[in-house]
Length: 140
Image 1: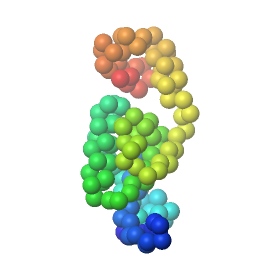
Image 2 (image 1 turned 120 degrees about the horizontal axis):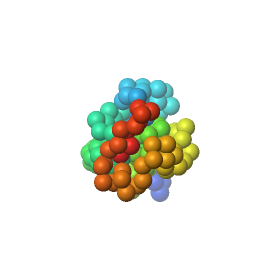
Image 3 (image 1 turned 135 degrees about the vertical axis):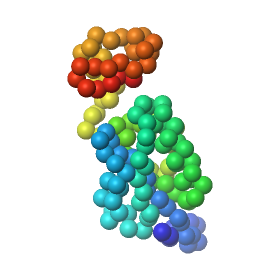
Image 4 (image 1 turned 30 degrees about the vertical axis):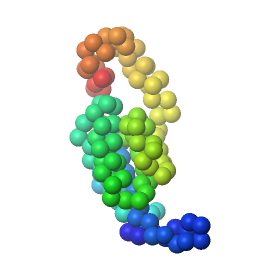
């Protein structure tokens, strides 16, 4: 949708999009919750298909790059692990602002704790790429 923006006394029409990145177990459909908050913008969700920081970061970067070609401005809303993936996707110069929603304040600390629970070092994790745990979370 078109929104107006005044720049140096000139009213410009701005084509703006809100991109929602869901958390673990979420879906792109959750973007519907944000439509009333951004009535002058198109609101879409990204249903990423990968689950490692580097792969999902690339998916997010590709989506934002495409949106950057189509829209004048991008607002990011990212939830939980989606916020973590987004922060590491290298998209900061392509978005106007970001709303990051996360119940985990220190993701690195959580990951390091999970590694200690299964006695895995960073070196072992790097060598194996993925380590399955007894508590149901894969470390990667």
